[in-house]
Amino acid sequence: MPDEETKVTFGDLDFDTIEAAVMETARGRWFLKEYARRNRNADTQLVLEALERLRREPPDARDVVPFRTVLEGMAAAIRHTREEVRSFPGVSAGASSTTLSEEEMQAAAEQRIRLMIATLQGLERQIHEMLALCRDEAPSAQPADGASPFEGEKARPLHRHPAFLM
Image (tube, rainbow, N blue to C red; front, side, top):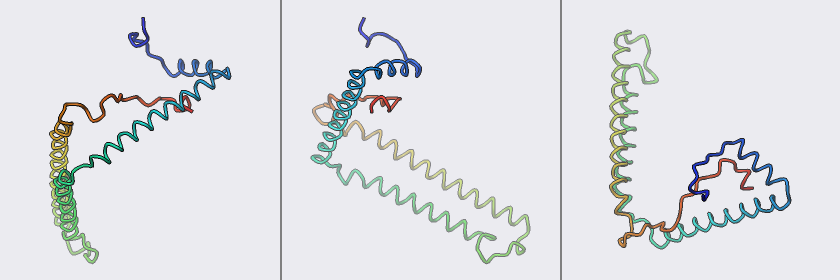
């Protein structure tokens, strides 16, 4: 039965044992070095091809405008909240803590907290809207012929033991 069809999982101890066995011989060390070199070359080639595709077909600036607008709005909301919080009694640098009663200080603190929570909830909502927009646009970003822009490329998991690829 081919290895791809077996459901065998190896742990760290298994890996270390196999690695030690292969590293015992000059041929084994050569094999691991050559494997790492070829693997790096393949990964580098995939990255270069992806960069070339981006160079040929750069993202449309119109796709970025909605995100930039939302981000600018989010930044303005944060600035506005910061200014509002600083303007509450007892927050400004020149305010004396003795001018306000404890109840007034408590009320001002609660008001600042409510404002910050409202701002955070608004920011969270906008982030979720941006993420939804990304999910909605993802299928339309595919080439018209139905082929994936990374056709033929397979995602490869990173090796848990980087020393193996050295």
